[in-house]
Structures are given as C-alpha cells and as structure tokens.
Image (cartoon, rainbow, N blue to C red; front, side, top):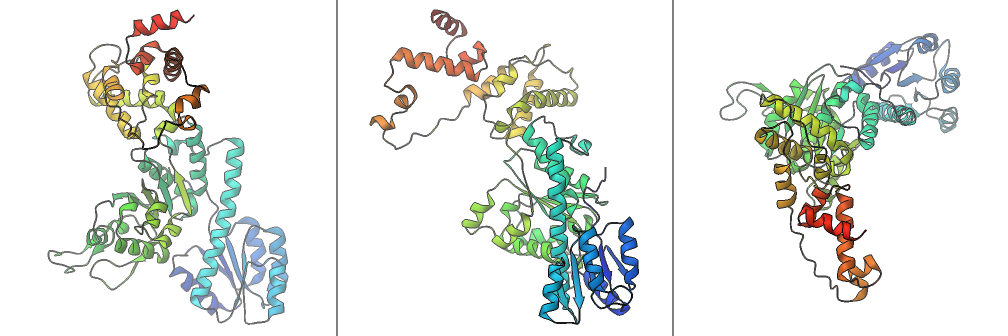
Length: 472
C-alpha cells in the first residue's frame, strides 16, 4: 500500500523573467526541493490554483498584466493556508510592511542569495505541513477514525493509546520529515517504522539497519558505501544502504548508541540531504525518508554529553512514543491468541486453547521485555504443550519464581510519618488487619481468581478459600 496522507508539496514560482525562474528552480532542486511549477505570466496563476493545490507560492511584485501587489490580497483571501513569498528589487521598508500586512509569509530582495531562498521556502513548507497535520489530526481524533487501517495490520492491538498513535502516524507519514520512534526494547518499533513507510507514499524500498555497536568506520561504510580503493580490501566500489533506500525509507534502529562522529555525519545527511561515500570527495544526494528509533532517553543522553543537542532537534520534528506492554494490559488477550497461533504454526501443532485465567495471570507480570518477552513465553509453552488446553505451568514459573527482589532503601521507617503501614491503615494495624488487607489486594490483582491469588500469597488454594469463607 502506498498512500500519501498530506497535500502535495508543490512550490509555485512566478516571475516575468525566464532566467530568474530557471535559476531559482535549479537552486531549489539542488537542495532536494524538486516538485516545482513555474509561470512567466501572472495571469495563469489563479486558474491553475482553481484546479490544483500548491504548498508555497513565490512571485515577483513588479510583473506585467497582474502585478504582485494585486495578486497578493487575492491569494491571502482565497488561499489563506498557502504561504506566499515575495521577491522584488524594491528594498523599501514601507513596501515590506504593507506586504506583510496583506499576508505575505516572507520578503526577499533581488538578487536573492541562494541560501536565503532555500531557507525561506523550506520554512514555508514546514509551516504549511504543520498546519495541515494539525488540522488532519484534529479531524481524526474527533471522529476516532483511521483512513488506512490496513497499514497497521501487522500491529496487534485494541488499545486506545495505540489507536491515537496510529492516527498521528497517518497525519505525519507523508511529510517527508524524519520520524523518531521511542519506546522500551521489544515494543515493536520496527513494525511502526514500516507502517510510516507504507503510508508515506514513498515508492522505494524500506531498508532497516541496527546501528548499535557500529564504530564510525563501520557506520560510514554501511550507510554511505565506499569507492574502489578507499581502503585495504576495497577492490570494488559498493553502494551503501542510503543509496538502496533512495525513493524509499531508511530505518536506523538504536540511534541512541551512535558515537559522536557518526552523529555528525547523520546530522549532515538530515540537514543537507547529501553524503560522501568513504574515500570520495564528491557528494551524492539522497531523497530517502529517514526513520529512527531508540529505547534510550535522549534528553538524559544529551545531559550526559553522549548525544548532540542539534541532532536531537533535527530528529524530533515528528516523535512517536510506543507505550510498554505493562501500560496496555488490555492487549494481552489479543497478543496471547496471536502468538499462540504463530507458535503452533511454526511448530506444526494444532493451536491449543488458552485457559480463561491465563490473561489475568499474565497481567501480573511487568514484562520488562515487552511483546518480545510475551512471544518467547508463549512459544515455550506451546513447545511443551501436549493436551487440548495450554498449560499455565511455564507461565507460573516465570511470573512467580523469577520475580526480582526489590532493593531495601536506607530511609528510616521508625518514625510514624515514614511508616507505610500507618500510611495505609491510619494507625498501626493488627496482624489480622494486615492479613485481610493482603488477601484483598491479591484477589484484586488476580481479578477474583483464587488460584492466581493463592500463588501470589504463596499459600495453597484451599487454605485461601477457608480464610475467605471464615470472614463472611
């Protein structure tokens, strides 16, 4: 599926001097802005806009037929969401102020510096994209709808947080800007990256690489390739993954582990859209969409001096955070069924039936390994399985026997205000009160299942049943 979700990012150039149109087009094209339409007759602008949309309009003020002074208020009235950039030889403060009052986004004085033109157009594109994204996101959240649910078919979930995340992805997928995906290890960041690619409209391939553990030489060679003779053993030139991702998406996983030199090279790629193969002094352009992921807190990495602040600001234009499994416990029954079916198929077994209380049992586990850990637990259980109903024994072993021991704190609990028991009961409780409270909490966590509650309390089920009956 290849579907753009954002309006076409076309730049319209209007000037009665053909050589200025040609020069401006070449300048923008050399910086990756290639979707451009040009007119040397201002009378053609409004008819074109009546049937097609553009993202940015750049035109001269002093033109024959319809001047920029006449065109500007019409565009501001009929196309208020489209940024307008003016180019003129008139360097007059009053003219600038009047144009800004009429709704101009920016004002460039001829001869226009190459960097100034590119910077202005890029900024206008970003603001236009942001406006469209906010409007689209608002519509989706209000209607609670997904335009392309099939793009998320591989992500098993019914969770509301995840649905809101999908709605956001639909909005930003077509923008072309970098997407940073954050979340704990094992939450499925690569599946989310693939969904971004599928929705982006990119016709090229989705290329994924884990950059953790790559030194700068390996990072450069892997991503950018090398020319023949660049180093010992480089008998042939080789294209890097960025070239394979042209027209598509490059997914860089674990970018929080990149060393500083590699971070600088990634920053240049994001800023300039170009790179140098190892051993070459000729830059190559890239139009690959960059998607990145990390399980690290990049703000803490920045504070520790391990991650560049300027790179972070380039990455966080669009940020998607995937919640851990412990925050989406309602997904456990769906994931359990999905992983059981996968495991049974890979092992050539008939799909076993999970006991009804298994989902409740799993909800007690914090799942530090998230979906990957649940998948491994299910695969192990299905491997051992031999009857019609899936045994809970292997799950109990993990949940009850491998629970980590919490470290003791140094804080004194001798004073009343620091005593957790007094905080719970309002007074120092009796043994019977503590026992009853503990049983009640275990029953709540087990959703009323006495077998699971008994496991939590480290007592027999019959013993727990007797204590519950004696309280009635």
